[in-house]
Amino acid sequence: MGTESQRYDKKLFKANLKPNWCPGCGDYGLLSASTKALSKLKFQPSNVVFISGIGCSSSFPHWTNAYGIHMVHGRALPTATGVKMVNPELTVIAVGGDGDGYGIGIGHFIHSARRNLDITYMVMNNQIYGLTMGQSSPSSQLGLVTLTAPQGVDELPINPLALSLGAGASFVARGFSGDRKHLQVIIEKALNHNGFSFIDVLSPCITFNKLNTYEWFRKRVYKLDENHDQTDIEAAFAKSQEGNGRIPIGIFYKSERPSLHDLDPVTKNKIPVKEPLGFKAQGIDVQEVFDDFR
Ligand SMILES: Cc1ncc(C[n+]2csc(CCOP(=O)(O)OP(=O)(O)O)c2C)c(N)n1
Ligand code: SF4
Ligand SMILES: [Mg+2]
Image: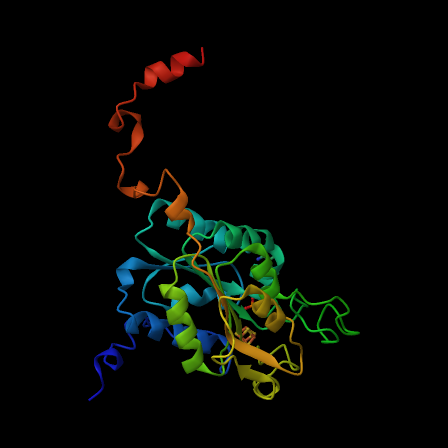
């Protein structure tokens, strides 16, 4: 017999479909940790929506029992923004890969961080383009041999933690899909955070990235402990700079600054999807509007 918090349906958010990821893909770790986190926190599938872009990782919504939108490449966050703006009652979770979020979608990542709408964004960072079979990604490590860099990657990888901190994200964390329990705890905290919560999830691609493997990470990752002050942005920046030898995981930064909904005068006290539709419903004489343009 478990305690109350241990008794929950761990499979509530799991779809009856089997993911088509390669056996051993890091993305399974995030799928397991996030579906369990949602169940444990007593969320209901009818109130949750997963929104993704394109990539192996972006097929994520298909493997969950909740609402889902499989968007075009790099556009998970603008879609998530629209959904949350019109229906703030939904728990909105954007997911995708490093190519999707740190490449084509990077502008949306920065603006979502500074906008601070209450969305959780989880990136399955395998440091490669998996779906398209092994091209370099913006987070590929220097020297990684890829389809597009047979001589080894020679562009500096993006630092998603430092970038999101600089852009104003109010919750910044890193997890490792090889440590699902720890990852689940981070996700629970992110889901409970009111604002843009970003988690970079180290998720090895066992097929196309032969350098950043589970073993490679296990030698390097360590958990941030209670001495790390999550409210100290300078400490968070310093931790985000730690390199290949040591890779901290955990919550780097958390601030209680108001979310966009707390500030926005239009949506603060309104749920737009529940407002009447159309001019007539709002008591506007459409003929008068047309007449204005004559
Ligand atoms: C506009 C557009 N450009 C390029 C592509 C091709 N494409 C599909 S997935 C992808 C990258 C996937 O990498 P990532 O987001 O890291 O996901 P992973 O497969 O590694 O999980 C690319 C370039 C596309 N689908 N649409
Ligand atoms: S190719 Fe890589 S990212 Fe895609 S499913 Fe296989 S292991 Fe996962
Ligand atoms: Mg990738």
